Image (tube, rainbow, N blue to C red; front, side, top):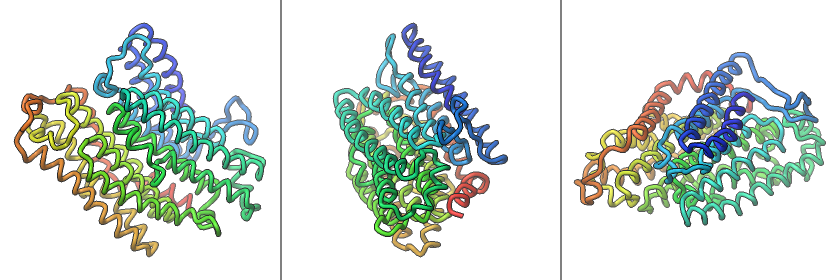
Length: 486
């Protein structure tokens, strides 16, 4: 529970100190996310060596009380959330949130509340408590997206409507499971479900949960809230949403499908969860990539790119083999690093030029060489150029598909890299090849040092994860996949 506490108390303190001095709230946010990262990483190291740790809230043991669980999977996810949250909090507030907050402006309180909900989702050992944490991060997300002005407010309202539908479906699903098993604790439910495997209520609950979480995850075709929410929200908010917020739905799917129900339910007769995740994931990869190619606005291009990248994760979950699950979990990490870097670069471009249209970016590489170098690292990793991080998650997904004799998945993932190359080549041409055509570009300079440093930290992380993928997979991710599917 330790990674959760600094974020929760930090949200309250940030709200209070913002009434006194707006700048102090950012300091509180940096301290809170730093502590959460330290606790998350040290906890991950400990559970990798010693096994899972649990905490009973209020001293009430499960199944009556709420249980927090830190195991390699939750520790891995919590560390990602805290790392991205820290970098967004270090990013300049006027660039990341499009405002200069005055007294009482709860920007960092909302950001910390979002991170609190995400961390709570990762640590929950109780299905209803997981629902509560899903709602905490969703409510804070609505407020952060609305910072994008009128269009951001409309996007937040649409996300509110669709997010409520997803939450309602999930809650109805766990209601079916509770009445069938008499418990909401994940471990207790996992022990009970094999005895009632053919129950229509259990299968119906599973279907509702998968649909609700797929909507939270923005898995195609339930992604319709994502493009507007990501493209109209401020860059820092978009980085949080694309890098970690949508991954909460993916984590919840993995946890519930493999730890609560077990892999046998994925191919249950009459409820082909595995096939649905694979085919909708593949459709998302293709449709998201094609729509990204068609975009002229850089943030909207990155938003549709996220739809495609989430398809990879959905496919990895659906294949339900150790290699594919390794690819999915590795892509959760890699996409968080790559997409947050790209959105933060977009924020730097907008800060200096006030431009969002890709055709107007000609010559930016010569005006912002440091920022554009970080952009190039993240973009090449998205394409899947070895030895950068993005290559390895695609490699494991293709390997898993071939191992499962699913050549369609392997071919689509390979082809999608070419589609990704298409929309990034267009940006490379504008940024690095063409001469400046806009006065705003010709007069532009590097963004502030805090913008460049956060981008470079993420670019370095992409390179390092690529270099040490074997260590990350061997020590952390592979044991998770083997335990869940062994």
